[in-house]
Image (cartoon, rainbow, N blue to C red; front, side, top):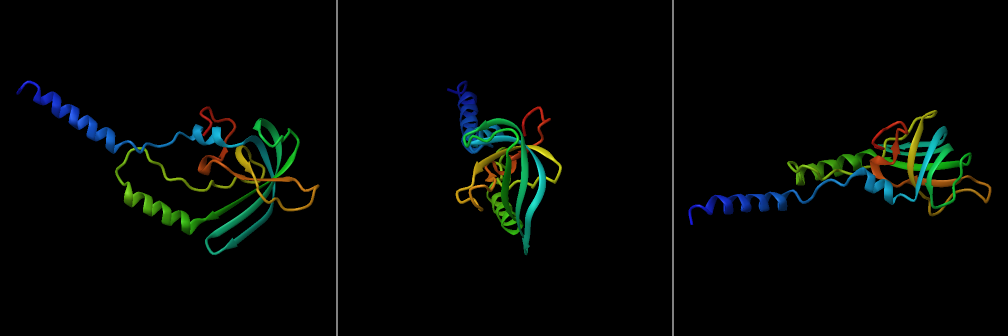
Length: 161
């Protein structure tokens, strides 16, 4: 019976560790695969930028330079609008709450809004069509980030994030 005790102890420790580490991080590729649009875009200009306290609301116009996938039928050369909001206070609160619940876990990532791309920058954008686009029939189609902080990626990145 004594010979089997180290094996049982090791098996119990492995099972306890596996149960504790079950909340692993989701690979960025999973967010990219779920996004209906994967477009390489060049940011042409900021159409609107509003700052309310710690909130930043932005609307940018971009030119599509390549299409990796598009459920909405976007084509190279199309002009699109990308709208996103950054609530910096809410991000800080969620970050603190996340870290207090899972301070020592390996994996389990904190999800937040993406950093906005800059005018003149070319990025691969993982987007979703906006539900209520602004403007009339001739207005460019509007999209919003669909992959949290992984929504805007350098096209030269070997890993895609």
